[in-house]
Length: 155
Image 1 (cartoon, rainbow, N blue to C red):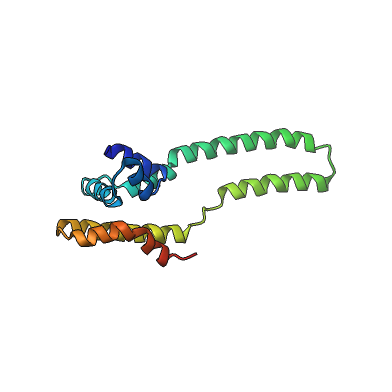
Image 2: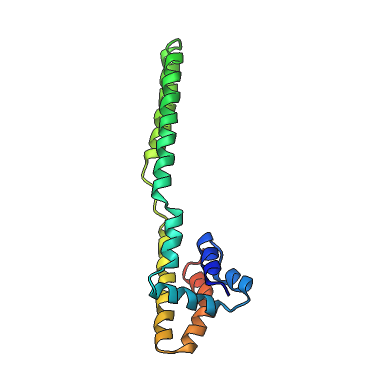
């Protein structure tokens, strides 16, 4: 099994079950690889977060959008001078609303944060079980992690 490919699939959002099936191994094998990488300082979950929250590209996209919005506003401002005051206010209101929606703080997905914390707890238990060579616990958690999370976070 190619560990890099498994990690890449995980970062792309594939489930551990799908990764294991793709590589013809058990889920336990994937969890062990993930835990070994974490011990070596490569946290797959942190990589997923980093991929999803690439601050530089988000900031650059936001800056481009705001520049475009301002340019559009400046062009529209010249055109709206001929409109009635109530029409001018409506257009200005739309620009303002768009800007503040963009700048509003992102809402935290508390359920996602909780699920991530539970996954980390399960992974840490697996690491501890592996260190103490407790294969029964490792096997159990590898086979049942998704069910455990599903029971905790019922929809």
